Length: 347
Image 1 (cartoon, one colour):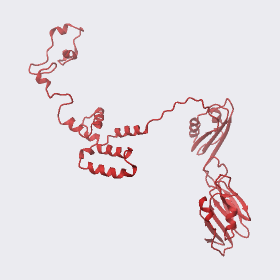
Image 2 (cartoon, helix red, strand yellow; image 1 turned 45 degrees about the vertical axis):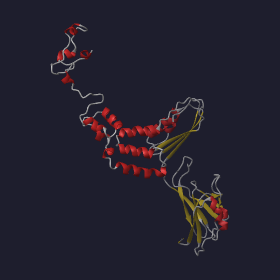
Image 3 (tube, one colour; image 1 turned 30 degrees about the vertical axis):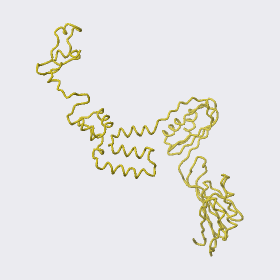
Image 4 (cartoon, helix red, strand yellow; image 1 turned 135 degrees about the vertical axis):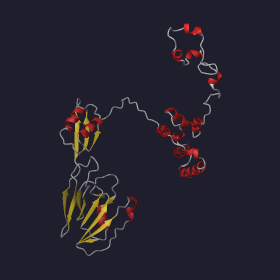
C-alpha cells in the first residue's frame, strides 16, 4: 500500500521450518521511499534467545525491493541498528509485560525524505515500583517494609526482589502490606536459597470426593445424579458421552419420579435428617414417608388398644406396682406426677 510518497510492504510471521521456502519477491513501486513491516525475532537486533533464525541482512539482500527501513514488532525492548545501509528498528511494547522490562515504554516516529529519520517518544503507562533488596543476616520483613514506605505505592504495580542472607520473609505479608498501601498488584521474587531440610507437611484433598459431596448437598434428582455420574465417571469414553447421555434421558422420560429432587420427596415438615435420608433413599422415599404405612420395624399394632404400659387402653392409664414408689429415689418420677409414662414403666 502506498501512503503519500512511501510504499509499505508487509511480511507475515513465518515459522522457522518454512522460512527456507520464502523467495522475498515483492511487486515494484513508483514511490520515493519503501518500508518493510514484519513481525518476528530478527538478528542482529534481538538477544540470543536460542530460537533466532531470521536474519534481517538475508531478508534485505534477497528482497526484490530496496527498502529504506525495516519496521519490526515482537521484541518488547526498543532497539535499532543499521544493517547494510538500511535502518532496522523495533519500537518496543507500549506496556510492560514482565518485571524485567524496566525501561520507559514508547513508540517511534519515522520521517521519510532524502534520508530516513527515526525519533522516539515516551508514553505514560501504569506506574511500576521495583524494589531490589539485599538483606543482611539480621534483616527481614521490617527492612522490606521500610524500603516500600520510601515509594508511593498508590495504583502501582510493585515488584520486590530479595537476595542476601537475611531472615525468611513471607511473600504474603509483603503483598498484604503493599495492598494496604494502595498497590494495584504486588509480587515478591525471593532469590535466596531455601533449606532443603525444611520439614513440610503437605496434604492434598481428593477433588473427586469434594465434587461428590457437593453433588449430594445439592439434592439433585435421581436422573440428574445418574447423568452426572455418566459425564464425570471414566466408564464411558469421552467421544461417547453425548450419545450415552441422550440414551439415558430417553430411558428416563417415562419415569417422572426420576426427576423429583430431594425437596420434592421431603414431607412438608422435613428435617435435615430427612433430607439426608431422602437423598440416599431415592424417589420412593416420599411415598414411604407420607402413605401412612408403618415405620421400619413396626408391626401395625396400636399400643393404646393393647393396653401396653404407659398408654391409655381399655383399662385406663397404665398402672404401676405400689411398691415401686417406695424404692429408689425419694422424689417420685416425673412421669408419675403428670400421668405420663417413664422409663421405669418398661423395667
